[in-house]
Image 1: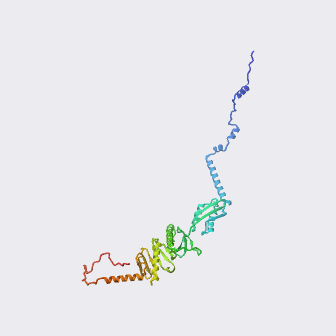
Image 2: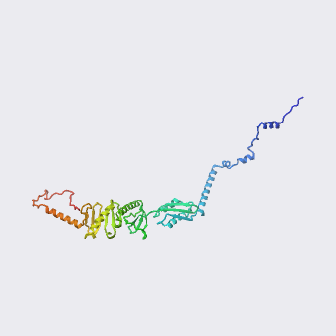
Image 3: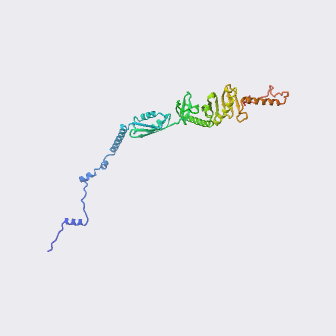
Length: 357
């Protein structure tokens, strides 16, 4: 008889493993190990209600804000030093005081640098201020000052420096270098309109200074009135301080030179001490006297360089010669004009006029 050999299951499994097939045990989700691996923060957050998530977010935000404020207001960020540069006429102590008061409650970290810069720029002598923080406890301030260009004589009699934008910078000091002459007719009302008008006055003043310096006439003027830019008036200085020259609005330098030449000539006459003004607004030299009379000359005429006495004598002689050469008048019967009263009717709108040469 033949014997039957029955192979065991373990032997069959071993043969299968030898062929490269590995059988893994089945994963049981309910095992304690698998439950521990699934309990991650993200998985737990999925079980939290949405309302609770919103509350947690608000709490975290409030905590962050409170922490930020506590950190910013800590003694570490309190201002300890303020560095100011660029000041020559402006007080550095005043700038430091304003900056320190602005930083007293906020500290360096939470300081509003733009607001501080705007506040410092409103100072009279400051054109621009740039404020930067230097952590943890310092602030740097850079100042661009306004340049004084002219001196204005106010209605109260004070002499004040102004810049090219018409901004008053402070009163004239004894140690300051005096300008060629002063400005009168300043708009002291304040506001943007007044500042624009004053800026135009400064530009007209600079133009006049340039023209007078080119002709060497600046020293003969003490003040210039710029109330109306179309009627510029110069007050002379020295022995001619009582004389005003009315220049108009154009060719100021050449007109002043013309006026001074005529004035120097007329001062040699007996009436020279009573001259009060010289007017060149029409292009002709008109000399006014304290008695209310005036003399007009034409600068382009041949008699412009002669004295008034010589000019009047020549005019008188010419009139006498003309009268001597005229034929003798004959008496003619008068002709009565037509009219109800024997008078010539007058035209409406025609009257007597006084002509001034």
